[in-house]
Amino acid sequence: MAEKSTGNRTVKLQNQVSIVAAAAIVGPKEGKGPLRLYFDTIIEDEMWGEKSWEKAESKLVKETFSKILTKANKSSADINFVISGDLLNQCIGSNFGLRECGIPFLGIFGACSTMGESMIIGSMLIDG
Image (cartoon, rainbow, N blue to C red):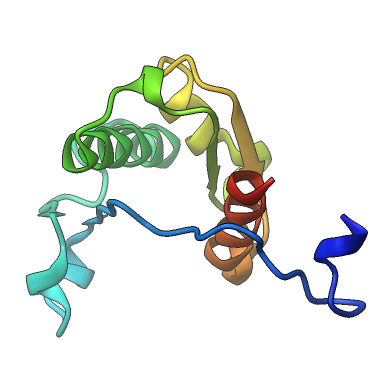
């Protein structure tokens, strides 16, 4: 990786990396906000019919991943890795939401940095 490092904290990607699909499923509060027109699904019940927060979070992850595959016109067989994170203990929501997809899963637990950290790791995996 030495040839990709341009400094102590900077990596220059050698290959073009892009996002081919994205999806967002949100709760009722986000659905009332100014970005509501940009969400794929707005659920009316924060628990989405589940009996625990953990089950609801897992359902959100599973359904969002399914939407991304559909929008990208891909199947699970086309995907090498899934990078996901949540703020539940041991990334349990992501683990249970993705366990049936049969794809290696990398769990990120970075609080507010989870999205950015996931994009960096994903970009480096693609570039590598």
